[in-house]
Length: 171
Image 1: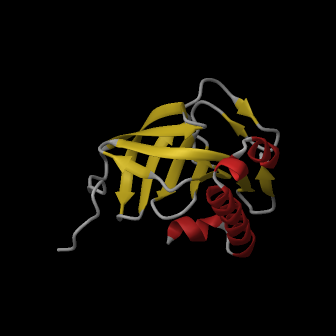
Image 2: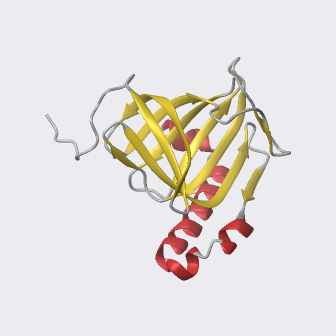
């Protein structure tokens, strides 16, 4: 039997609370069903948690949508597969974050402003919120974290264009 790092309890099907933190404040908290946890990557599924519809222009998140979210303890991003309630893939929304931390039944993720959208067919790969990232002051406060965030965005964009994100989350 292999030992698991602290905070990596098995328990597929258990409910976790995902806490998305931004600039030291909790942006949103929502329940999610834990699907898998291999000690490095935690995968959860949750309905669209924000109230109402959020129209980004390139995709609409709306009540009934279901997100399968992949968080890593050793990577600076999260990949969220977005589907309609009927199961149609809309695409992948990727948050650039510090590595995820599981504390008991709470999964804490610190959002670093940068995002990537990849459409279901892979034809649209959009870097998002680079202006917010620049304005956040992270490069001045924590240059190593800012560098890691930019490298993570570059890595995800490369993976999306070269292999597709389904290959990343299917591993």
